[in-house]
Image (tube, rainbow, N blue to C red; front, side, top):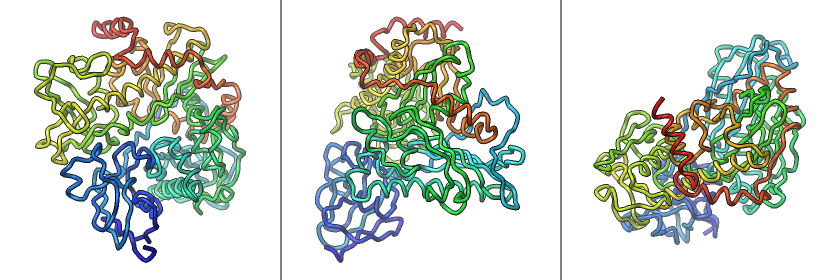
Length: 556
């Protein structure tokens, strides 16, 4: 066995076979991109590969059809080489997307003069980099620090995605796999280095990077700083540290393009509320306002902040990756071929959709999933408990995963297979939206304020820019607050980091924000579970309040 090898196609990468190691583990070790939202815990069914050679396992009838199993398709996380050389072809749907993340973010507090950070280049143009270190996506902006001009922008997938789509999966991976922490940290650093290289290549002006400002969640900030995030996984879920002293890139182990630069990492607020939220608060300007505001950061890990210029409180909900395309069988990232919006004709139950790139649909991204759930509910095809009703029979089929609604028939899809949405997919979405909405309700309850006290609701994250707010309220993603009060911010984390890079006073403001913002631990909140349970209905147990808000919107 020691002399045998695993060949990954179409990459052409060959690695020695290791006894007892799954094909997914071989792919991770080899750096071969392969989707695994659950981090190899055999829950998502996304790591589909075509296998040639002697193997055992991976024939999961719950995720694979009989025809796929007969054709040699296996789940890489459950498939192990036994003897001889093995060829593994990564199927198109199992390869991570090159996500065109939403780069623009609104900086509503960015009204101050240009005051660059103090570093200067040795005999050349001084450049600064603002980074958003997202669970799924890395995004960056390159700035000329002589005048604040933006020189280039770029995004990339977070290479850690192959080791788990959610943060807990990555912490488990780092703990339980030999060398897991070093591997995950190395992937993050290589992803950041690659992103900075792209920024420099796209820049119209050469120069030296002297300052980097990075905003990320607590887990990623720990990885970047070289600290194990393991304590965050267990009670009391506290991070090893909340502040990250300024250090040069060479101390962090970054590549040569930022080794001489001074790195400033936004401080964290708690185990699962990180510097990205601090940066988002900075960009929203809610910390300068007299009125009470809510901030939602809708992503793989959902965070919520509540407050004004006098006080702020934040929390994190274990929302899950449903709105990032994970935990939904037909889900995918927001790239060409993804359905981004859906409407259902009530009489025929047929779906109409729009696709990113205008080609044939291959699956649904977050905004499409949100629309589909809202439309299924509006059309009466699913009930308030998230179960299929007797309606829409002509668009429903029985599958190995149970009853499913046919969003796109196979003859119209990019893959030739039906794009299906099962009851279990809907349950994943309902759990996600219930957790996010309950988090906001828990913060309001903690400070004794009613929903009516919220003057503005900021929605951060690229997903927040594309979601249909009516669909969001129709399924209860947010508390029932009038839509006129909602303000999409886009990538507020990157916008806040850019603001701090351009003005050293904003960086000091961010540090004071972190020290003056309370972290509310939902795991110790006795009322959170009841709020969560109330959110496990469409749109909510408080259905009438949602109806009145939506009805008011229809008359505008």
